Amino acid sequence: MYRHGLGDCFLIRFPRIGPNRSDFCILVDCGLIPSSVPTDTDRIMEAVVQDIGWTTDFHLDVVAVSSKRWDHVSGFDPEKGWFNDFQIDQVWLPWTADPRDSTLRSLERVRQARLGILWQGLVATLEQARGISGREADRSRDAAWLRKLEAACECARRTAEVLHFFGIDPDRDKFILDQDTAVKAHLSRGDRAMGWARTAAEHVSYCRAGDLIDLTSSSGVMIYVLGPADRPSATIGSPTPSQLEPPDDLGRTLRAFFGASGLRQAQPSPDSTVPFDLKFRIPVDDAQEVDFFRDHYFFWIATA
Image 1: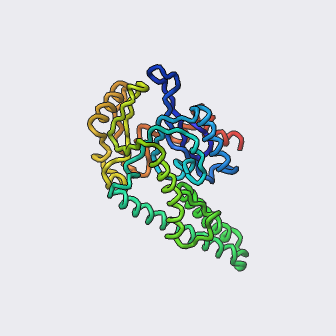
Image 2: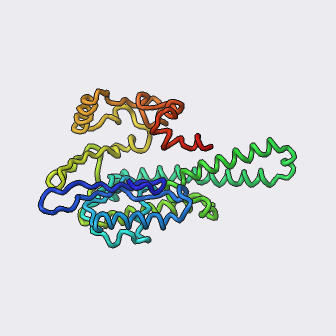
Image 3: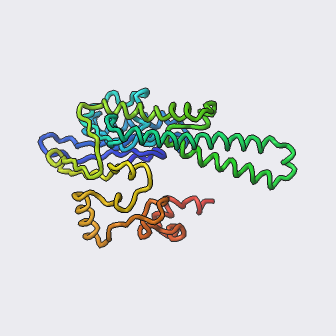
């Protein structure tokens, strides 16, 4: 796992079965959010890809791309050409990246509409912040003026953090005020990277939840595809409990695993905004008392 900033990049290696002594190499995603690092993101991503090349002798058996969000695919941007020297045997993509699938157009319309609303809200919030900071008369009421300005800036910051996941940098792209132009221009970055992935290997597979990928002859490994769901309602909106039930083969596997481990299979959380079932959550106060969380997540408390 590359710890290069806020983004996914996993290089998985298995001993190869047969006379070939090299490892079987799977790269899962390669991306980075620009706002997550203080230095040049291109330099960081180029170094990551170079390390992948040195580790694999520039040969990847599989490149798996889970999403076209920028934190998953910025390293695959064909304009950068960082993977031009690689030999790639297979590419695995989610079914939502299959241009032949009619559902994809519905998903894209929903996503573009939601991002457009976010962009419009960000522009409005920035205008509000500028208006507040420009009112000289209000500055005589320091506390109230400062609270308004801080609230507007915090709202803008949180909105910008979401947009960063789609390659939209409001600081860099603030001159684009039209929401449709801004969103279409920046969603095309993920489209370009996904387009590269579709042509990076002769063998391209579009995966759905429940698919099994048998690699036992080459590496002794069986891959279980957990998502995305193959029902539009489960992908676009909040899933119902029945939509969260895994397919038969995968369901049997998960039930066997949870049964062996003494855990029951997680049921959908009543709170759809939280990713984990109640029994898997740890309250913040309790987490601060656990060495792992204190060392990796709350170290700033001790140094504050």
